[in-house]
Length: 273
Image (cartoon, rainbow, N blue to C red; front, top):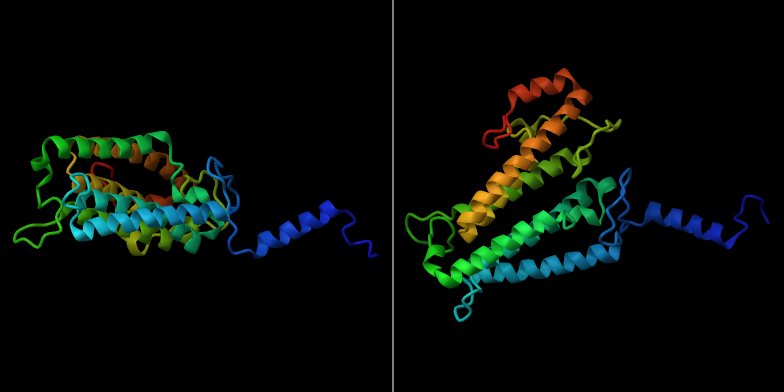
């Protein structure tokens, strides 16, 4: 027996696990990052979540495209679009990370473990929509805000905002690739590069701007006056603080190069220069 060969069964298992980790394309273990593990970080969990999100997306898109179910007061095309947008967003976060930023990919990339307040906000928005829809359905009938009807002089503002916001965020994540992270990086890695071309030449933080307009668009589609204002204020406060922290780190990483970029390109989020 060769002296280099593993002498214990446990050694063989560890060796096999190491080989599998390096070759298995379904692995969800990120590099230099420990997942929260509130959701099991396994390929099975990732595929199960993808199936559930896909089912919700299909149901929502069907409701939206068919105009809802006429004999079910709550099964509206607005609710359908919200469900499709919400599930599509979370699936897209994982898919883009898996495709263009593999070393940071884990089950956390779905952003479903995004804090209790995030789910409370979306749940409250749905409750507001259903209560107003039941008590005063005429308040949900402003077609210029959200519509699937081809009427003259109407514009589905909320739908357009959601699509633009989703496209903006996904494009930013794809272009930044390995330079993008769902968590603010406070330590510069050798692979870090400052991305200033493409969508980053128009938006300084396009992924933040994309989510900001996506989230507001979902509330416009639902025609929720309270949640629209609440989402706008909370998201503005969140991104204002996050951008300050992130840009302090970016100045430390890239110095004058980032200072010049910051002076040249705006965030295009209202009142956040």
